[in-house]
Image 1 (cartoon, rainbow, N blue to C red):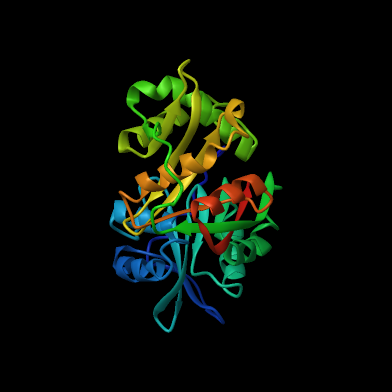
Image 2: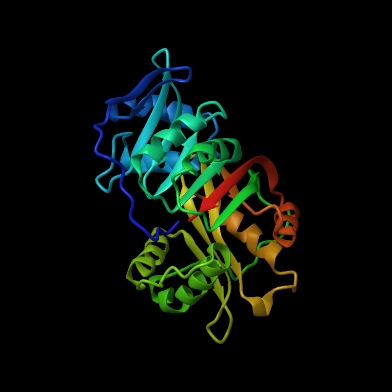
Length: 300
């Protein structure tokens, strides 16, 4: 998610205790020493926790990042039982309805701003029950987003024209990415300048995680990104069909092709979708996706 602000948490040191003595245990910022325990916690639900597992595989540590991201950990009897990424976005892992308000209250006390909260619905909504008292009014609260997965090739024939985007495709692809973002999130990712968003799209292309097909005139027919990738699962994001090609029965073939590419990277392909998006849900079901959970997203 692209931030409209660049929030930073306060400068509590990794490993320093934030509070203890509450029913839910001790809350503190995680350090490198917590990496193995955090990885084990996240791996217990690798599909729901793809974001955090991807971060751990890339960074190699649970310690705070140079850009200001931190991971809060909740301990019970010395055991890590829940965690929450807190950077530009807030992403809970293993957070129950009892633990969420405690983390939300801490984040509220920091007075910092975030661009979104997303993850398992129970965790996100319990965090939000406290954080909402000090946060700006959200742009949108999406409390019911089915989390879907597929772990085998689809029976739907894949669209043969879908391919990995190339750097030379950037200028043709960027308008479609911008249109998708505006449709999904409600504001333009390039309103304050296109440099950062352009670099984000290029980065996905360079990783081989951007998929596209163009029509003969050079317009995007369909595009999607393998937005978050861990060794266990790929989370598909940015699915977009050109309005000129909608309603022609093309989506299932394209999503089958997306699954084919994603399964080159990890055994499970997942995504989450707004519950009210009946056409998209029907497409994903026809491809073979099954619901395995429910996400929620709060956008600012």
